[in-house]
Image (tube, rainbow, N blue to C red):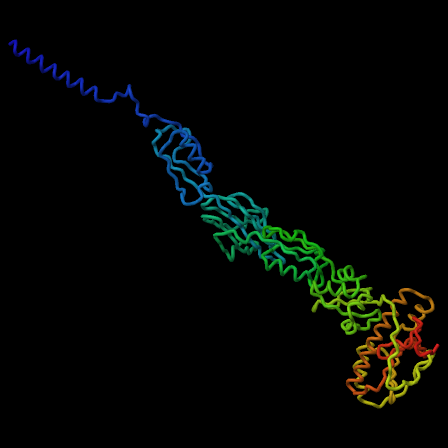
Length: 499
């Protein structure tokens, strides 16, 4: 019996020992807490840039954070739009928090309203996701650069001041994008046409070029070929034909980069005013340089509208300095030509008397014109009719021809009055105009002389050109032979001693 109690005591002792050892091997909650079971309040990171949101959650102690951000892209361009666990809720640090993010994008909206002439000429209001962006007038263009997030967005086009008619278009934006379309509208509908989307906004901003000094029609083509769609000319109500106006100034400086729908105002002046402002008072060399730089042709005349272009072309640069523009206007828009009236501003210097193979017949007295007789040489008549018709602009002239002399008496309208004002009254303007007549006459004298010699092979024939009284009194004011002034009443030249 004693042995039984002794054995029982040993068994209990062994059980107690095993139990004590097992208890010592386990972790007690009261002595070492499990940190994953502690709950932490979630912070709000919606609308924060993704890197900042991630850092905020990690700083709060959360370790299990996921998102839809592509790590291969620039993560700074992503924004949190939703978090799987609401802010303020307490969860364990290792509980999952998923962040839904969207990428920062740019949407370029490019809209053209097809213009109606009479009816339904209303403006169209454009809204993006419920926010009004602006309106496009009838027949005009509208552009807008919107900063948005990737995802689906809604464009609404609606009649101004009304909720109907309207058109809607949903756009799935995945990156920078351009949306372009035309709007056709009536009283009952707005239709979206020619719709186009591109995954870029390149070409929405363009560089302005210099169009000052250019014909308005050319300037508008240049700007529109670049891509600018909002060009306005002033004075708008006065400009009917863009070929007849010149751009004087432009509202945006050359080299400036602006949106392609930015208003570019071109302030213009008529071609007549442009030529008058720019050319009058300058000499031939100066205006030829200006015309060449602007692409204009020049037609030269004197104050009596005699064409001097051929003479000017043959002039040397030094002589051109003595001719000054007194009037200038548009001659032809079709070929961009300016009609320039010039006056001789230098001094008429007599040239030495040329040596002639035969002595010409005596020049008639300055008080009477050469005797007029019919000529029978058909070839002479044909040649001179062509040349003189061009030289004297179909004014009256008479011809006398013999074996050695060809005398041409010319009766320009106003010649008598001009000679009187210049020689008797000493009027400076009249003297300037007279000298212009003299220089033009010298040029035409040479032209006629060369024509007679070359066409008729009559180098022995001396051509004398007389400027006579247009009132019929028979007085002679000017005599020129082969470009040489033999007699000039106004400038006191009398190489023949006729007094």
